Each structure stands twice: as structure tokens, then as C-alpha cells.
Length: 162
Image 1: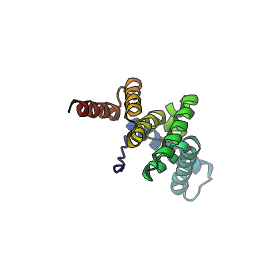
Image 2 (image 1 turned 90 degrees about the vertical axis):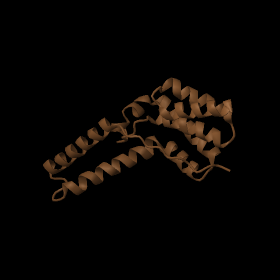
Image 3 (image 1 turned 45 degrees about the vertical axis):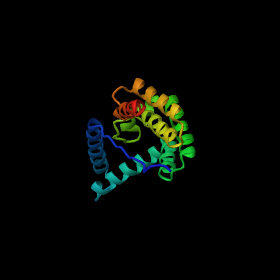
Image 4 (image 1 turned 135 degrees about the vertical axis):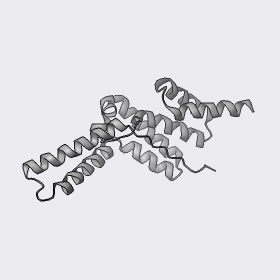
């Protein structure tokens, strides 16, 4: 039986600051152009949210579907979605690198990195330990600051010692 699904969210504070500045600029532009009068403080954030969710759905749709499948404990389907997400961001690295602008995402982890971590988690839930370890090792090599991969590998190492 699968365990309850952990959720880890990390924030890139420079991305948050950039987004607040972008929102303020958007409100100023809408106000200056008179497009949102008399409520630029309502229409600016509304446009910001619509753009954010629309771009995330368009660019990170597979990732979102994978997360939905994980919540439903359908790890085989989740794995397929995360694989597709990783392939998409392999082909479109700039969309991932500049995710603070392209998807208005303030996540510290890039989508490719999250996809690999989620794939490793799915492998673990499916009983495919070797594949899980390989992916965590790949993430630790490619993203040495990723604490999730390092922690998972330490736990696996300790478990092997017992």
C-alpha cells in the first residue's frame, strides 16, 4: 500500500520579488492605458493570474497531470506524465530556466528537476527500487543543491546498512 504523498514546496525569493514588480508594472500600465479603469488593482492581478495559470497549463500540463495522478495514487500514469514533462523541458530548456517569467512560477526547483524527483518517487511507490536510486543519483549529480535527492539517497544508504 502506498504511503501518504509528501508535498514539498520551495520558493525562490528573487522570483517572488520579480513577480511582485511585474504585477506592479502591469497595474501601472493598465492604469496608464486606461484599460482597467476604474479598477486597475482588480484587473491587474486577475490578468496576472490568468496568464500564470494559462502558461502553466500549456507548458507544464504533463507535470500537473502527473501530480494529479500521484494524488490519486496512480503511479504508472503519473510516471508517464512526468516522463513527458521531463522530455518537454529537455527540448525547451529556456521555458524552464526562465519559469519565473514564462509561467510566473516562484519555485526554486525547475520543472525538469521536479519531474525527475517525482519519477523517482513513483518508482519507489511501484517497488522499482533500482530505478528510484538511479534517478535520485542522477538528480544529485545534475542538481547538487537538491536536498530531496540527497536525503533520499542517505535514507536508502542507512536502510541498506541495517
